[in-house]
Length: 181
Image (tube, rainbow, N blue to C red):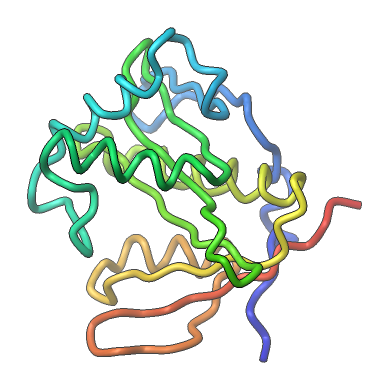
C-alpha cells in the first residue's frame, strides 16, 4: 500500500533539520531547534510551562495533559524520540516529535500553543522533525488526527501523509520517509 513519501518534490527546499530561523505570518522571529539545543537552560521546564497554559479546546485525544505531573510524565515518554521545539525568544511555543512505537515505526505528534496558531509554525515544525527523522534513519511515520481538524489534515496531506484507516472521527495517516540523496 502506498503510504506517501517525504519529502515530496514540491517541499524539497524545506526538508532541512534544525536549527532553523524564520519569520512567522505575524512577523515574529521563530527558532526551531532540536530538543537539548534550546536558548534556555531548562528546556524541559519551558515545555511544561507551555503546556500548563494550553487552552482546553486546543487539546486532542487528551493531549497535552492538563496537570503538571501528567505533563511531566508525558514529556518523559515523548522525549525518548526525536524532538524539535519552536521558540519565540526564550518561550517554548511548539513541539513536534517522532516517538518509536515499539514495532519499528514512529508516531508523529505536534503541538503549537494557541497564541501561535495560524502563523506557519506547525508547518515549519513538521518539516523540521521529519527532516531530522530522515537524517536519523526513521523510515516510516504514522499519526492519528481528528478528521474535523481540517487544517491539520490538509498540512499532513501536503507533506505527503496518506490515509490508511478511518475509525469514527479519527484518521490514521502514514508516511514513508525517503533517505536524503
